[in-house]
Image 1 (cartoon, rainbow, N blue to C red):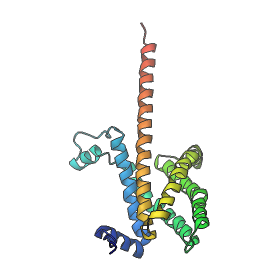
Image 2: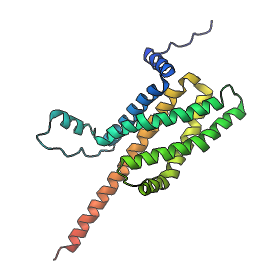
Image 3: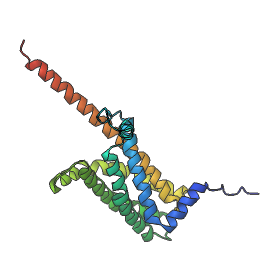
Image 4: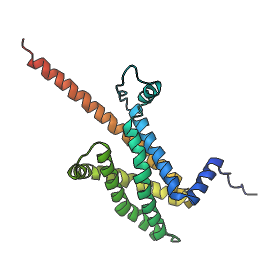
Amino acid sequence: MSAGKAPMHPLLARYLTQLSTNPLRTKALTSSTFCFLQEVIGSNAAGLPPPQIPKDAAPLTKALARARIDSKAIKMALYGFFVSAPVGHFLVGTLQKAFAGKTGLKARLGQLLASNLLISPINAVVFLASMAVINGAKSIDEVIRTVKGGFFSVLRVSWVVSPLSMTIAQQFIPVELWVPFFNMIQFTVGTFMNIKIKKMRLAAARKEAEEREREKGRDQPR
């Protein structure tokens, strides 16, 4: 007698139901939550100092500062809801429709190529442009410089992660579980990259501060 299929967790079943009945809203809420958590976890794991707040600030303000929940975390949540999720919904939906019902090696290779050569570059541009705005870019030129400066770095990560995750999904993950699977991959990679970038920026800021101190010491009269 063959073993039966493992029962699905009730929360996952409810999530998949919402994904089926309200796909864009569910993806938007998921992306918003994950983008928010990526920023908060990244700030805490990288060891960023909490923002300076007045001593007489409200308890809630102090708690938010200790947890590194700031305006950027809120902006990241808005980015996930209004930008990342709708763009991903459209691009992945288009890819799935283009290859619906197609099986075999050629179809799988075509899906991988389309993902890497079409979807990944678009996602990279959208992500970098959004990050430029969130980080305070004031002009189109600043946004363009940010996109040009980070495009191939982001794309290289995507070209490593995307084929691996797509191959795993094609081989082992039922199609109805692709969205939560790719969400978890993106969340894990995004959190790792966020921590790495914040640590690099923190190290650069410390080095710059040390160099300024050395310059001050040299400029002081003996």
